[in-house]
Image 1 (cartoon, rainbow, N blue to C red):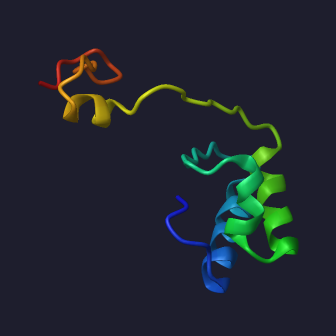
Image 2: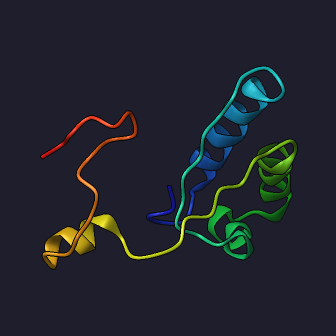
Length: 90
């Protein structure tokens, strides 16, 4: 998420998806944006507040730090070559 700011139609669709799933289903959202940048990315402040309320309430946040595995592999570095289940991806 977050390649370009959301347009009007996309804002409505994201809000609708989150409303449908709110407190009923799990939702995973991955982004490279910092939390402070989300309002500007979403756009209209009222809709941004609604979207962020549903995303943040009862959320678990996982912040990954360090070099990108893709970047390490490109540079010939020592990056893990196994997937999340431990299977070799070489």
